[in-house]
Length: 282
Image (tube, rainbow, N blue to C red; front, side, top):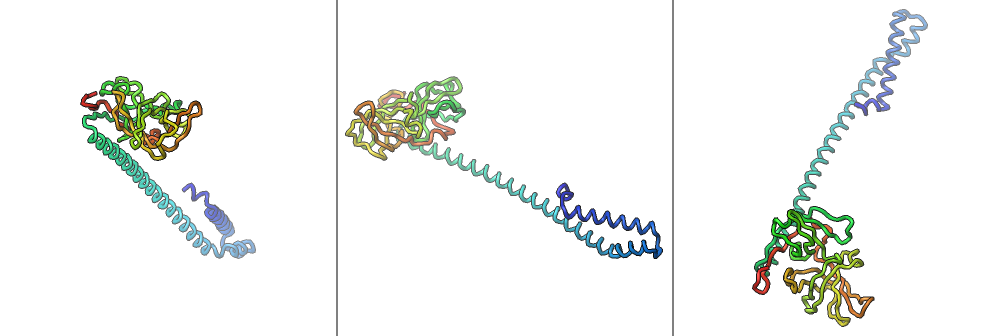
């Protein structure tokens, strides 16, 4: 209705109605005599019925348009609600798909490594001041998690437990300079270690360093954990080599490694709380 009163045509119609009413009052005041004054008034307002009819039609059109606009807005609201519901369903589907992929890869890894024990956890917080994608998860000591446990997403290593608290834990990612793990190239079998680098972290990469200048590691090589530490099993994929560079401080070479998953976008993970290594349960 607010839009109706703001309509220019509607205001024009109201003005014409006011003029007609004024004319009718003047006619009534002069009676039915044929004086010069009443004759003039009669001449002006003779087509009053025709004008009134047109006014009535105009009001009908405006009312119909107002009703049409209201129905149109209702349809828009209904469609927007349907779109919102479909977007929610799509988000649920994407989340379910990601969870299924996580479990599928974890199951494959478990089949290849008998004795792996996992605890599933959700990412509950991120340190915005930390440029190395450290994060906190929803499980801790009470769930069997301990400092140094490997943190995975499917078959990929994303970090280690830096500190386990009773009900939550803090994770250091593979691109953090505080992270370090023995590693090897699954093709050439070259052995060294992977750590984080402040320079490479800007691109989301970690560093497979201290390689021989004659290294045969190349673009696309897959780097995995070597399993030298008792807290880290062998063969968990860290990532893929994206570049080979010479160190500026010594004569060695390093490989820039892209982690197997986007750590910054993780919303869940698996913590490896135990595994069999060389016949021993850790």
